[in-house]
Image (tube, rainbow, N blue to C red; front, side):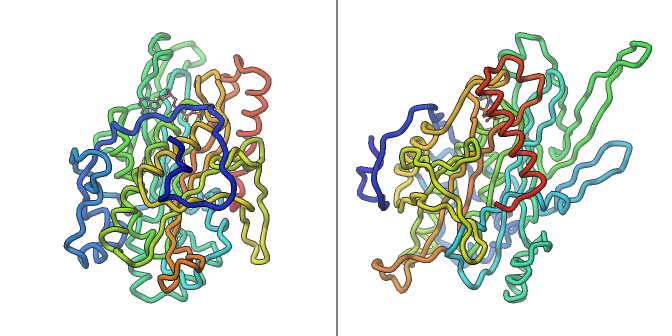
Amino acid sequence: MNPFARSSMQRSGSNGGPHHHRQYPSSDDFIDSNFNNKWLQSAGLHNLYSSNPNLPPLQDFGFYGSNAQASSAASSRSSSFTKYGSGEQVSPNEFSPGLLDLHSFDTELLTEVHSENNLNLLNQPLYGEGVDGVNAYSLANKFANMSCGSVENNVAKSSLADKEKASNVAKIKVVVRKRPLNKKELARNEQDIISIDPNNSSLTVHESKVKVDLTEYVEKHGFVFDAVMNEDVTNDEIYSQTVEPIIPIIFQKTKATCFAYGQTGSGKTYTMQPLPLRASQDIFRLMHYNYRNQGFQLYVSFFEIYGGKVFDLLNDRKKLCMREDGKQQVCIVGLQEYNVSDVGIIRELIEKGNATRSTGTTGANEESSRSHAILQLAVKKLIDGNTSKRPRLVGKLSFIDLAGSERGADTTDNDKQTRMEGAEINKNAEYDRLNFTY
Ligand SMILES: Nc1ncnc2c1ncn2[C@@H]1O[C@H](COP(=O)(O)OP(=O)(O)OP(=O)(O)O)[C@@H](O)[C@H]1O
């Protein structure tokens, strides 16, 4: 059905038909899991929940099934990478300059900000010949990255309680998801060279090497993350490990970003696509229970960055401009935002956006995303309950499915356009690593 025909969704501007590039995978296989209090503790929000005993479990809002499954607690420690033997560690702060900052997209920032978080999903490429794709996910909190001046000011303004709360939130969280070997890899008899350690927070890459005398040997590389998910985990467990803990703080003037990073075919889209729907389900549940009749509204927008240009995925791929306003905030001019009050409509919008997204075929993935896709869920609040006034932004959750970068060895079969896209994506990825903020 056409989502624009539904009365519970509003937007300004004209409607447009989708470009059918990609099919959205079914989310019916989502498995609901029980709300886990530890998540709120991890997010510093256990008091929020204890203040409302009637609040049902986060996963039991009843939009999709009710199969309960316990989720595990988010780690509040920072992630680090260690190379066995060397004792060499990379601290989370070293990632700070590379974190995509979508906060700066907003020109309507609230003046008092209690806390500000980034949830970033990273797909960490750990590829060798015949190696599985591995996705790493990270949750970064700007309070942790005190290098950002504006955030420091916010911290200074906030109360001691807020500071304590902020310090309880996971500063940066990196979760790796290992995908199973695909049919091609199995047909080529490729070996799985990644093993996950029993603690589920580190993995070992077994790299085959040949000495100068041609004797073969295996070099082991160990990496430590906040969590490492095996190939048998469900998307629901990924959601519980990454996004679920920060949903409540979106109502507390917080913005978070969650992104997937990794080589083409490593499973970024597979992992990212179900997350916004699950998140909106939980956001609605909070709106209906904890914040009933308080004038909260949910807005959805979805755009892609393809070939260095921005396109609105919910408005006929309309080309948009990124501009900097007087406060040096980058904003996307003309991006359509839809006021939604029903998970079904969000699902339709997400499907429409995904179908419109630019895809192509690479040597490593038949249906490869050739663009960076950014889906935003914005929680806004009516001013004095007045529907004629523009609601104010309270918090925002951004999901970014980055286009996959490629090894040169994987691009031999690609046509010219795919190679050009790959070059652009790799260029962006390099730029993103070195630079960001957008
Ligand atoms: N954890 C998983 N379990 C089962 N299949 C998976 C998993 N992860 C990925 N896949 C499958 O692997 C293929 C590639 O996944 P996907 O398109 O998500 O990769 P990607 O990283 O987004 O690639 P690109 O950057 O090229 O878009 C898909 O067919 C997907 O269904």
